[in-house]
Image (cartoon, rainbow, N blue to C red; front, side):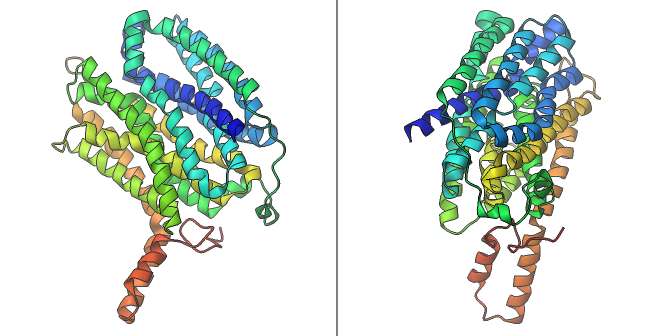
Length: 440
C-alpha cells in the first residue's frame, strides 16, 4: 500500500506538470504577445498546438502503456518535455515557440493515462472513481500554480527564466517516476477478454464508447480550452478586469478544478453505492456546463466567478469519464481505451481553442480589446455542438423515459418511483441501454 501511494504521488507530479504546461499560456500570453507581436490567431495556435500534439499521441501511447507499463513510458516521454521547455524558454521567434510547445505537449502526453493505467491495475473497480479524483485533484494543482504563483515568478524572473526552472523540475520528475515507481508484473487477463478481441477496433466500434465520447469531449475539451486561454481574454476584454483581477479569478477557477476533481470522485463513489450510475452524473454536469456558458453569453447579472467556476469544475469531469471507461473495457486495454477517449478530449480542446481564436480574430480590436459579440459568437457555436452531443448521449434515456410514461398512462397503478429508478440506473455493463447495447 505504501508503494502504491508513493507511485501515485509520482504520477500525480507528472500530471501536475502536464496541467501546469497546459494552462500556463493564460498567464504568459501577454508577455509573449508583447515580445513577439502575436495576435489572437497566433496566440490561439500557440496555446492549442499543445492539445493537437497531445491528442495525436494518445493512441500510440496507450498501446505503449499497455505493453511496457506506465513507469518506463512516462519517464521516457518526460525527457522530450525537458527539451521542449528548454527550447521554448530560449526561443527567438514564433516558430521556435511553436516547436517547443509541441514538444512539451508530446512529452507530457502520457501524464494522465500513466496514472490511470496504474490505478486500474492496482485498485478495485468500485474504488476507481474515488482514486481517480484524488490523483486528478493533486495533478490539477498545476492549474493553480499557473495563476498567482506563476504571475509572481513572472514579475520576479521573467518568462524565460521561468521555463528554465520548469525544465529542471521536469528532469527531477522524470527521474522520480523512473526510480521510485514500483515495477509491476503482467496483469491477469480478465474474463471479458474472451468475449471479443482486445483491439482498438473493439474500442472505437463499441456503442457505449461512441455515446460517451462526444459528450465527454465537447464538454471537458471545451472547458480546458476556455480555462487555459480564453477565460483570461474574456475577463480582460468583456469584464474589463485589470491584470491583477484576472490573475485572482484564474486562481479561484484553478482551485475549483482541483477541488472539483475530489468532489466528483466522492459523489460518483457514493451515488454508485446508491444505485445511480456515473453516466447520470456526467450528463448532469454537461447540462450545468451549458447553462454556465449561456449565463456568460447572455451577460446574466451574476458575479463572473460563478459561471466561470462551473466551467473550470467541468474540466475535472475526466474523473467520471475514465471511471466509466474502466467499467466498459478489461484492464488489458485500459490505457488504449483511456487513450481513445483522451484523443477525443484533447482533439476537441485544440479545435475549440484555435477555433475561438479564428472567430474572435474576425473582429477588430477596440482600444486593444475584442468586442463582446466576438466571444458570444464563438462560445455560442461551442454550446450548439455540446447540446447535440448531450442529446445523442441521452437518446436511449429519452426512449426509455417515453416508454415508461406510455406504460404509466396505460397502467396508472404502476409505481412511478420504480420507473424513475430504471431510468437513473441503467443495466450493468451499458451506458444507457441493456447489457447488449446497440448492434452497430
